[in-house]
Image (cartoon, rainbow, N blue to C red; front, side):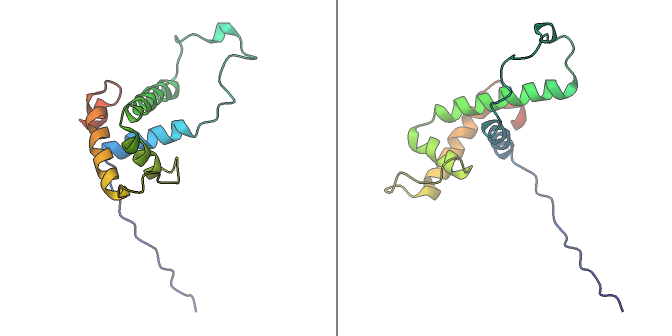
Length: 126
């Protein structure tokens, strides 16, 4: 006799534009810095004339991640810290007099305003 196998049903939850921007930023934060530069490569291969689609999209993700980094750095320190804690970049909440949940809500609102106005990230919010 065979046992019936239960298949778990998962529902798809659409990411918000802010979550998508933060995900791209997190991938950029966690990238390996070992392959940067041109050591061991020919300068003849450094042109932009023959980029494939993956390189184009990687470049767009890089631009978006750098924009997110700049917008996070432009936030007041406690809001910056809340976003970094939310994303797991830092683990300690350094502001004991401020409730993390309240500051995080304010930080997300302020960051979203800035990302909507940035040329590299505004297309996520359309």
